[in-house]
Amino acid sequence: MSTTISVEHLSYTYPGVSDAPGVPVFEDLNLTVEEGSFVAVLGSNGCGKSTLAKHFNSILLPCGGKVYVGGMNTADAERLIAIRKTVGMVFQNPDNQIVANVVEEDVAFGPENLGVAAPVIRQRVDAALKQVGMYEYRNHAPHLLSGGQKQRVAIAGVIAMEPKCIVLDEPTAMLDPKGRREVMDTVLRLNKEKGITVVLITHHMNEAALAQRVVVLDKGQIALDGTPKQVFSQVDKLHEMGLAAPETVELCHDLNTQGFSLPLDSLDIEECAQVLYDVLKA
Image (tube, rainbow, N blue to C red):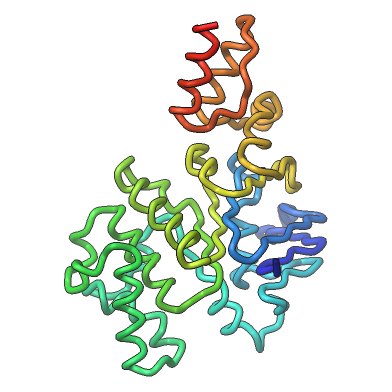
């Protein structure tokens, strides 16, 4: 399997204001994201999640080390357009990404700026809106949509540029439960059916549990890295970093402190219920 993103010995420091010293975030961070994978990145506030995401399409450039996207050095200014065609970004607030008064015009904005021919843009816009389940709203005004619908339009705008990878930085943070489900269903479908590499920055543990791989950042370093079951079963380590496991795992962990001996890898409700049933029946 080929590598979509490669982070090698990354260091980054936010510059200080006036005479104040800079704020270091990373000193020697190493990470690879494989093509077609779905990786969730977790961490407490200020751990560097968003800073890392912005390195993936040259919004930020390393102070030291290298970041490669599809083999391209993100610090190479001549490859900037190619890098941003490879990695699309979706941010927390969809209103910050919507630039047009009609949904289909907004989705067309990215391809137009890339110089894509008009007939091809038409095809891409229609296909992208269908992929996120928003085709029937193509002639609607974005500001009249719900938060989840707006975020799906923002994702469609990225899809229309045909990236190999989508990085979503807290895309559901401002949404209600229904909006979160809409967005996550869309993300999962794009990954499984279209093979698009997904990097999801989130603070919702249940969203991270849907990924194939979970990376936990702490103090500028990778503290945990593995499958959701491998990472979330380490409840005490997560607590030390100010994080929690999904509610099902937390329940089993709490019961274990009361004398039970339950596995800590039940990530969904049905699986957890079956484990509890088996224990109580025994």
